[in-house]
Length: 173
Image (cartoon, rainbow, N blue to C red; front, side, top):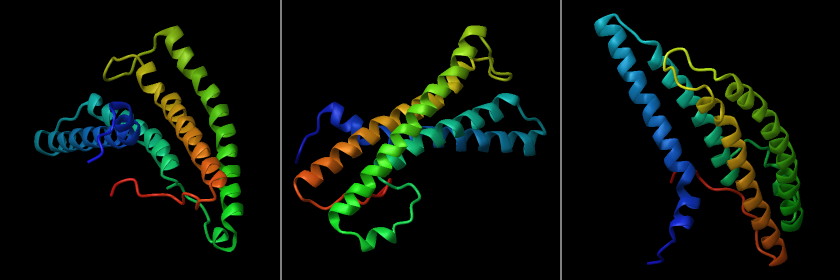
């Protein structure tokens, strides 16, 4: 059996474990809040905030995971009519466009994070620094850029060695 280094395992499973953790936190908190609301006729603002911010992290980390596995939405009927090389070039073009979008969004996402850090804003219910929640967007785009770089390297290697283009995988098998 092939033993993977710690870095390889983190690289392979980082998004999966983070998604699982945030999803579990979202479901458990939501279940507790429904129980509290229906049984005790009482709800809390912190429960709603945990669910909201867990969902935000879930979305951005999920976007990075989708980039890694090429599981994002695309019209792939066009790829069926292309040669291996053209298909690889189309994927590379899409990845480079996405890199430009991700860099632009990453730069813009730091603006609200820096304003929050400057003024020390806190969330209403949890009373935690808003920067903890606002950094979900830069974290998501940073992970996306990292996965895009891996994808570009993989595609260039496949073109160089005349192998089939990676079409995508499933996030959870």
